[in-house]
Amino acid sequence: MKIGVLALQGAFREHQDMIRLSGAECIEIRQLSDLTGNSLDGIVLPGGESTVQGKLLRELGMLEPLRNMIKAGTPVLATCAGLILLAEKIEGDPVSHLGTLPVTVKRNAFGRQTGSFEYTGNVGKLQNFLMTFIRAPIVTALNSQEVEVLAECREQIVAVKYGNQIGLAFHPEINDDPSIHREFLDLCEKFHNGIK
Amino acid sequence: MSESKNTNTTEFNERYGLNKGLAQMLKGGVIMDVTTPEQARIAEAAGACAVMALERIPADIRAAGGVSRMSDPKMIKGIQEAVSIPVMAKCRIGHFMEAKILEAIDIDYIDESEVLTPADDVYHINKRDFSVPFVCGARDLGEALRRINEGASMIRTKGEPGTGDVVQAVRHLRKMNSEIRRIASLNSDELFEAAKQLQVPYELVAWVHDNGKLPVVNFAAGGVATPADAALMMHLGAEGVFVGSGIFKSGDPAKRARAIVQAVTNYKDAKLIAELSEDLGEAMVGINASEIKIIMEERGK
Image 1 (cartoon, rainbow over the protein chains, first blue to last red):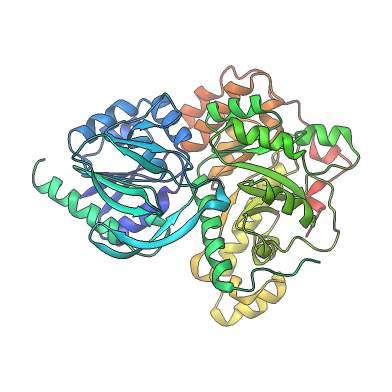
Image 2 (image 1 turned 90 degrees about the vertical axis):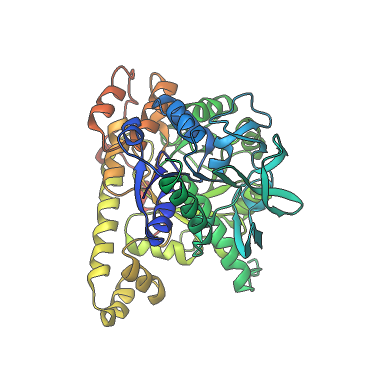
């Protein structure tokens, strides 16, 4: 199994460490050739700044190929900025990026850095998971009935799943708990063995 | 002096984790100095991962001389309203009141910066007293760990600001990394003496020994003016780059900014950086750092 982590900007190394800890092979996606030259069983869109990542995806000609892979069913784990890249609509912004996840998101929904916080709660079947929100977005609307809500916090939706796409407003990669990465790798393994 | 409000260590540790986390999100990015909302929008559109709001860029501070202070909060607010990326601002070394003001207007990161005139020639700010994160400059490992011990959650080199001369930033980064390698190679019973020599707590030295890196994110800053400069710093181990005067003192700021952002992401691809370096217009004029009178890196130890 080979997982690609989008490594244009942000906390991509933390995701790589989590994935390697869980026993899968991991490569960095920096250019189009990294996407086309590898047979990837899963993609991680890390935290960082969505405006930077979205812009680089376009300039490097990677937006369309990545979108096609996700539409074709390649599992994707998107955290914070990654969730914004994946979302179909971004509040207050006419431009969306990959747009494969039928939700509307709101940037910096808890305010600036002094509004960043930690919260422990359930994420899907995982109990008492430590969620770290850093200038985090939220999901403000579900635009398809097939979107499943995995977690809420402060009465806001902060984690969703739609087919093979997992979108999180928080950062599982900067703590020590690899549970979410393991669940994601299970999805990747099914994709690797089954549909592919 | 203000009393420490973070008597609750758990609370400080949680804030510190979040603040280190924001620096992690900035990695692989370019933080650009801007002086107006218009410049901030140009920087964001060019792919800056954050902007540093200040009244005058370092080259102009150097030219103007006199006392350089925190920027007008109104000007900083204008920039906060103009962009969705994080907004940073500078306060003087040791000036905890300027820092309190920046925290009060909800800044995302404070740079306790030698670019401004120091307000205290002995003490840095006790950054553990704040909820807002701090980035500080450091020329070597000892200085970096002293700032981290005071509560800084991000470190940058102290390359000579406003010069367009990258030599100090290179020196600082090379020195820091060589000291980290040396600490990592020591026997554990040699770490106490290393802590004494570096003038830092043993626990921080032990962390560096065990992990072979700084406990926080480390950016390059000072004198970066071209895509090649930025890529050089990434090769030397910087996790991202600050660009001050280099962008808005150049011929075509938007194009240069875009090129530097791409050079940081693909710093290993010399062919791409060659393309990016074409037709950028005039680079900032630059001053040879050995020709100037005020050496800002000497401020704060």
